[in-house]
Image 1 (tube, rainbow, N blue to C red):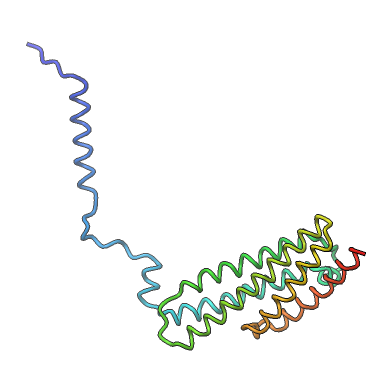
Image 2 (tube, rainbow, N blue to C red; image 1 turned 180 degrees about the vertical axis):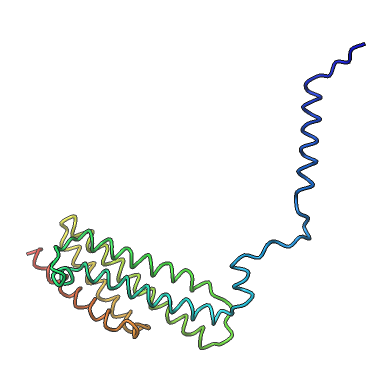
Length: 199
């Protein structure tokens, strides 16, 4: 006597065995997840320590990005004996804005602080980063308008960048004093050049 096994039964049996085997490999709810770098950092560092470490890196990176942007203003290009290109100014300004954005996003999430002075310093530095973002964003917009031959609009954006720079100087910009002063000189020169191009 022959036994006929339907293919559907074989497939069903196979599916049940796979599901059962998969269930054995799933960790139980009581199994703790592996500790990653974030968990380790939270376990060993307070918000104060995280801020101080991030602040040092931010200061260095913002300084480097400010210097790059200044090199691409007409004044900076002339100092390097290089041709001035509005596209390069726009690109370096966008780089500065992205750098300031990234540090602002990271720092605003830091918590908890043990020392109120450190939290106050973080809040002041957030204001500085906000001002730098405005300087960079308006400079990028000015260069973009210049590329479109809209010199009046470029002048307006550059003037907005110059105003934002004053805020940066008054909100924690002491470490970048020389770079901010150079940026002010570059913006003043740029504004004058756009004014001349409008005439």
